[in-house]
Amino acid sequence: MQTAKKIVPKLTIGVGILFFLSIGYILLRGNIVKVEVEKVDEGELIQAIYATGFIDADGIANLRSEVAGTVSFVGAKEGEAVQRGQTILAFKERDFQLALEITEAQLSEQQILLADRKRNLERTKNLFRAGAVSEQQFDDTKKQFDQAKEILLQRELAIKRAKEDLAKTKMVAPLNGILTYQNAKLGDYIVLNSLVATIVDTSTYNVALEVDELDVPRLQLGQEAIVALDAIPDDRFKARVVRTVPQTDLVTKTSKVYLKLTQNVPSIQVGMTATANIIYNVKPNTILVKKAATLMEKKERFVWKISENKLVKQPIQTGAGDLKSIEVLAGLNKGDLIVTNPKETFKEGMETEIVETAATE
Image (tube, rainbow, N blue to C red):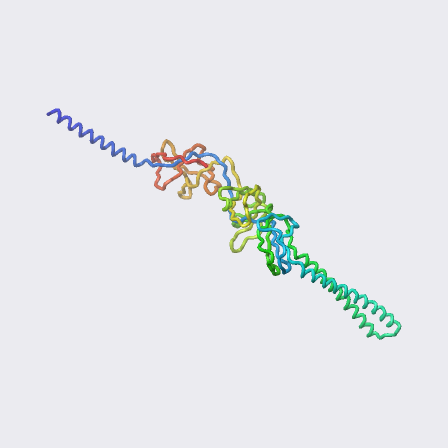
């Protein structure tokens, strides 16, 4: 019985020690923070100007009817390739041919009349010199000749216009390309100045962009760019700056910039929405960290570095950056381990537990 009494106090003491050890472990465990980390490494910093726009083409021909008429021939349909000089559309020629024949007949009649007036003028001139006719008669004869000559010029101009109108009954492709618009059918009556066809030279595609005025000073001809199309979201296409327009829109505060695609883009069409990153600076072998890993305190930027599993507040000096990363000029070395998910509650010297190592990009 005495032995039992001795055991009970010892057991009580042991349980108490275990209890306090557990409480201490829990308290200490509460100071351990779970962090995501990455190793500092060198990379290539690419700075680019972001801009939006659309696919355009330098070679676009909008064919409008220069005469009114009825469609008698359709030489190509929408989506078909056409060659320069190919007839796209033609109107009935009969009325235009008839108008030409009438003006030609009028010209012949006027030529005969002018010749007669010329002979009459020569005869009257001789009679006037001989005193056989008055000066008024001579002036009247000369006036008739001048009028006939003027009418002849008008007839010649009418012939020229009639021939031009006849030629305009055929609408011819001025360049090689794809017929992107053609809505006329046989028998349709087309009024004057109607848009009847559009041809796009697919070899002249470009990307028309609107660039913010603040980015314009960074632009230079020949700069490389990466283009994305909403219609082809999984691919990226190379391009370069070929033209800049030296004028800023007063409303949008943007300037026009044109890129030339330097690779073939399948299924591309005029009007497609495009976005582009125009590269204006590349810095290789640069210490980079994610912007999200940095914090600011009293205008000083810092990161949380891991040293012996503890948090160390590390001030850094930064340089250029892009949308995600920033250049570190001083304060970090290649191989340093930094926290990528910093919290405002972090304190110097806190124990850490690494739950994930972020993949470097």
